[in-house]
Image (cartoon, rainbow, N blue to C red; front, side, top):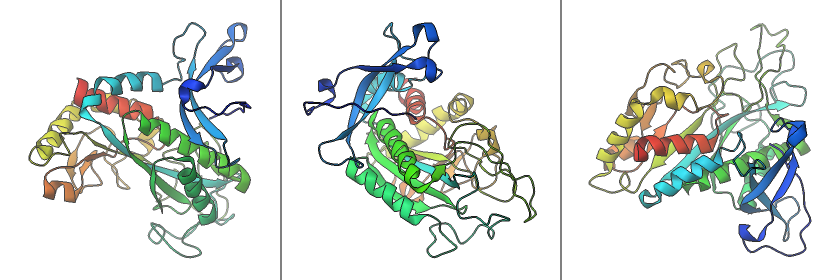
Length: 343
């Protein structure tokens, strides 16, 4: 993610009042040097929690000079899909898991020459030695609330120094806008703490308590930041509903129909559900195996989970547990809508 700042001399009432801007795409690997301008088209406005007052943050889409969306612009296609199914009122709620690291690349709060105790006391934990960097997490939560991000909660996760925030319910394209802004705020606040939401995979090459040896790799909110040891990965569990699934009397049938359609496009979903997801979707640590589609009530080892209360009341939503923590929310929401409502 990147940002740049502009001074405005008139307060905008909406996105339509903001002008198109540009940046050097050759410096971001989005354009060649001989034709480097990439255009920024404002898409959504949020309040600025850093400068306060009348200052704003503007989420933008990237376009090439011929008017086509840049290859990195997944919002353009997600918006088209959402417009086609607006009458179905698709709601999304995404659960963003992530892992904190020191600036030196070591898991935040972990012993520098070893490992913390095994998983168990950390999930939704309270107290020193069970949770790490709560002040940082609270700062992010408050920044999201101030900005107008539809953040609906936070909690410490199963692995120490792993956290989660939830965004939604949001209708249609708003989900991607709000989740990306929440990610931006997380990274931006991390600058002030010297904390990174790791932009690489970390390999712990030894399970001894002598030398953890972190080695950086691929840029992302990585779904399996620690590959050695009995540690959970990180996902972007995606909750989805439509007007039909939320309607008593027909809701459960609509949910079952959606799951049947998703089962037939399993690998197409996996293809856009994040990089290195095979390291996470192993069938262990509350995941289904990447090569097999499954669904079940209250089953966190399935591809699709139907919450227990949804099955009991007969309407509500489903949870797609396959997306990795580094997946693009625009891609997730687009393909779910395409599979269940368009195809």
